Image 1 (cartoon, rainbow, N blue to C red):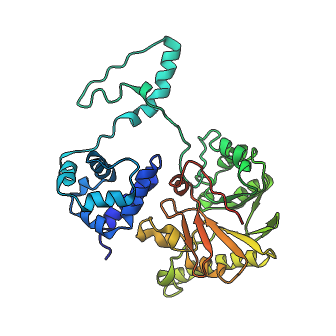
Image 2: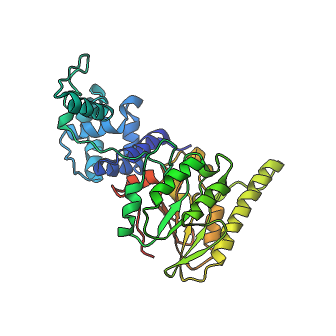
Length: 372
């Protein structure tokens, strides 16, 4: 049984949501890997273990906003009782500036059309949202791998218009749409038309939801995306191979073909999928190659997700397939929204989780650039 798993998971999730604060991201990641601090947090009531309350209390007692994780650790583990007392006596407030994000566009429209307006707020928290002009707001596209929906309007136009400034090839790691509907793909393609560099991609599980992955693939291919469905491509001396991949678990916990026929059929599909990806890799004659997947080939990059669902995020079979070849420079995948950004296969090949929520934890740029 893993001790403090609930607290660890809470902090791991917070790291994916607090991306506007690099300090908070650093602190939460530190807590996730620190058994002593997790044990200290475990002595607090569950409702008092929340990261923003603990961090605010540490700041209240003098921890600067640019402090390192080591500084935070020293404050918590060296607490004389004052930080704990603050945590126990205080609560966080969630209805201040963030609430105005949905109201500000409407307020602006009213003020433009009808002139200056005055705000009046009453209640126990009255006054917290009376000053929208004192805050700045940034409106982002929904997070996901990309997960374009039917109601989206140019969700990634700006991204695709400028990615050529940093990269020579754009790689798309699946879950490009919510449900694999034709209209969703059309909206995505409207944005992709602005991309000025070669594009390579794989489908994700979301592109299969409506039962028409072939249609999605065809539409993307017609738009110029080189889809990896058993093929391999060479672009400017770099090889690209791969495919969606499949689930099944990692290491000693990987599902084996034993027991019921349905289990054997499931494992057989995973084996066949890995074989398709291996055939794709075999086609390459390049010394520098990139394997593109949707599912993870290693457990490293799904850490941070609930352990109960690790088996549904990838499979060691994919990693074993990759490790049979010496010309693989790196592997990229998506799908694990709360996973870790980097890992390695058993042989040492770098693996990068480029799911959009993971990228958001690394900074403002919604993509990563690799030199191969």
